[in-house]
Length: 251
Length: 352
Image (cartoon, rainbow over all chains, first blue to last red; front, top):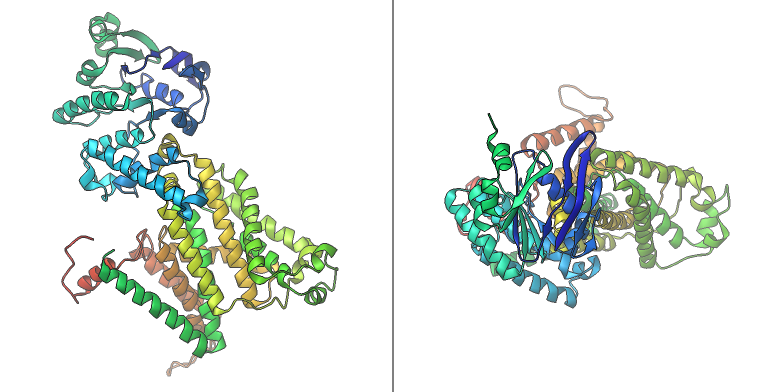
């Protein structure tokens, strides 16, 4: 599904990510973990086209997508959420999701402005799809509310749902459990596995919350100072001395 | 919107049309001119608000697009005789000398020409952000003005154009103001309109949701230029003389003032702002005249009008930072709440 081929990202003298190699198969849930500043979000940004990698290639579904623009990447089927939630602040909950449906609607500015019949049909479908998505996270009663007035946990879920509205095949989640209480975290884990099955997704997630990573990921990569120090299934990672060293330090 | 509010809106529309109609029939020519100028400023403010308020692009090039529209429409509607009269220093280019098209067609072409210029300017300038974009568009608008001043055989240069056919009647300008407002409401309520607002709220998130941010910005810029061109053309057909000097930065600032005063990102705010500013600019004119204040007489202080006007602006900026309407649109619930605040009526607790 996704393969990166020795991707490196340097900012001036700083190497944020070095020789990053991941391979993700269809319908896997893969974790990307590491201490603060390890380069996890930078890795995400190179995959989603926010940065063009200094070296290396990125392949999605066998196609070279290195250096493509973010909106092209999304069009090809990679959607993402953000570590610091980025909802559209002056729009309500439903509109936030509807923005993301525009990509697959295929209507131009004229058709939509003049509300031509073809547009109206697509708009209706988009609204139904958006409501369906909002229902899956229990936000149907708050569609008219301002997106940023929602409680934190709901904002996170709204952001995931908004990403899903672009009909992705690969979903990148940047710390989905950040700031959530234990109860919300448990719900989130079920939710992640649920959407994987329901929307036939492949998921790559960054997470600090070990409970989440160990609970839902079949495999994981561990980054430290931009270098991939380990990769394997949860029990292998937990036993890996390098990982323990990176997280806890050594005497 | 419930039935009661629908009826209220219908009544408001009829009253609005009646006021305009009665004004057109019974007011003096000076007052009618202010009435019509309000409508033109509505068009201009709305088109600028699409950029500044809805797409989040700070542009200072509006006067340039107005100039393009005004010149194109004027040159296309003047009779060959009028053109010869105007171009007495340098003869007009032959291909333009005998062209004369109906007013509505000329207006459409004027808008399209302005939109095309908008595309030419927008494509490079929109790679910039914030104040850099403002400076770039300001520069381009000046370039347009200088080009018009120097393209003597095409535009009659600094002499400007006189005796432009007076097509901008009350019904025409208010009709176009209504058309502009309707167009913007339809656009912004559509799927494309949502992507425009998404770009304003968060470019990075919009991109990640598959919105082609650059294309949305250019589209918005082009649409804004189109209506600026139409507004400029209508202005030319109202005052019947145009010259390059009138399309300077001050004009852009006046429109920007309306947008900010009315509320960034509010269509009804721009409409309200345009009417208030246009009427106030004229209503305060007495301040410039000599005044008899019983105790003493002033000899007339030219510019006092602008001082008072600036003071009023400051009050608005101090007490309503986001403009009169903020980024909200007018609704009847708002009136009900306002009445409750004043104490006329218990506060409306029920939602929409």
